[in-house]
Length: 239
Image (cartoon, rainbow, N blue to C red):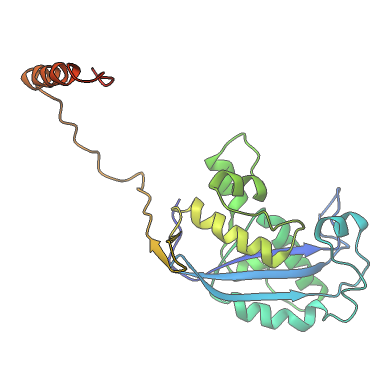
């Protein structure tokens, strides 16, 4: 799986809750959107983050997950107020989300509640689901974001609660690892300076390496050399 070099937006949402039966988004709303930008496999530092006042109270189970309360959102904008800003941010980009149908379902529901004739988000942008990618890479295993961080060695110790922007930032690192490996590694030296070492992961389409086997004479010479070494030290790498 390879990431493209086009503009990619990794995003996440937090919500008032979700339904266990029927459409998971129906009767609920988005309370937070977080998104980060990747260009040429690098995080640009450009991001979108907003809290949203929903048209209903937040379920206690949802508050336990993300910590966002009705009181905190009391003075925040409604979704319709930030819709165009979000559309401008994702315009022309590939969208990446974990369990994308959850987030896109809520986005489309917010579009619907605006009462405007707006296309679904998958009609506006190509959407990539990292959960579907992970299931193909690790079939039969759990593939939530915390487990993927552990699997790829990504530090998420600061993730005590779910947060849309934080989760988008973490998912961006996971996505880059899933689609070609880490792009850079910062190594600490003896002083405060750092150096960057590029890490390139070989693809499955690489050329097969030619294997050259030792000849009988070369093997005999190798054993003779080990016999000579063995007179002065233990030899632990004999064939």
